[in-house]
Every structure is written in structure tokens, then in C-alpha cells.
Length: 56
Image 1: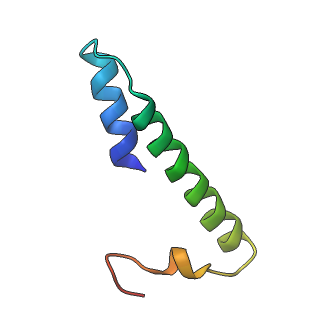
Image 2: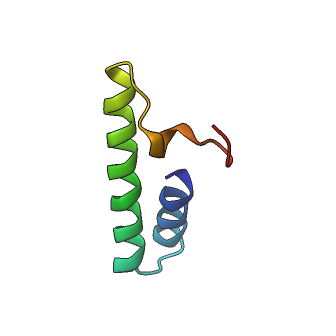
């Protein structure tokens, strides 16, 4: 998620247009983060969120 935000920030700072692809990628990352965070708050770790650097 951080990489997507950084990419958009760099585009904005350089005066480049923000592409729909970039916005869509960021939305996908936020949705994934939201799902993981909701699971962690309830004391569970969804399978998709358990892997860090390719390992659980």
C-alpha cells in the first residue's frame, strides 16, 4: 500500500497526471488492508493477511 501512495505522491509533486490504473491499484490495496485490519481487530488473521515476505 505504501508503494502505491508513494507513486501517486511522486506523480502529484512532479505535475504528472494520476492514472486510473494507479488509483485502482491504491483502492485495491486499501480494501485488502481494511479486510486484514478488521480481522486482526477481532483477534483473527485472515489467511490472505498472514503471509509476510512469503512466509506465515
